[in-house]
Amino acid sequence: HIAINEQGLKKKIIVAGAGDGPAKGQEVEVLYRGTLLTGEEFDQNQDRDSPFKFTLGSGMVIKGWDEGVATMKKGEKCELICPPDYAYGKNGSPPKIPADSTLKF
Image 1 (cartoon, rainbow, N blue to C red):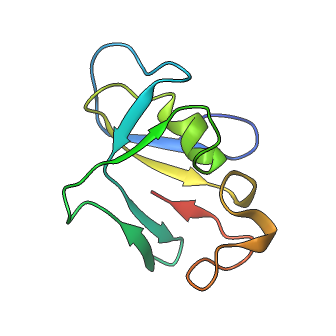
Image 2 (image 1 turned 30 degrees about the vertical axis):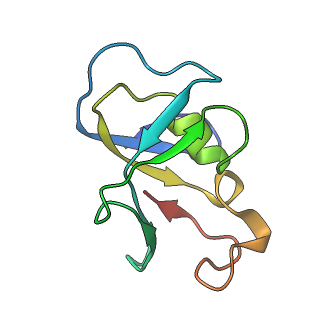
Image 3 (image 1 turned 90 degrees about the vertical axis):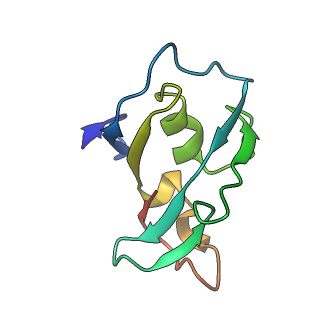
């Protein structure tokens, strides 16, 4: 895993993409599988083959996605490790994501 920032956000490239990365304010589409570090899945859209769309840098998603997806290139597949401050923090997202959870996508 490569550190994206000093706060613990990390990325491991599985399949390299091509071209330039997305710009802040651009709509992006992602297929994902979200798990706790235990491997327990809390959400995914890979089986539905219906990409999740959001505007990069707009705060529509967790901070780990805004910063992590900004480092990706079109077609790239990677694993993002999002520490609690870049995920759901002290509150978590009950019932599936406990407080202070590090998440893997």
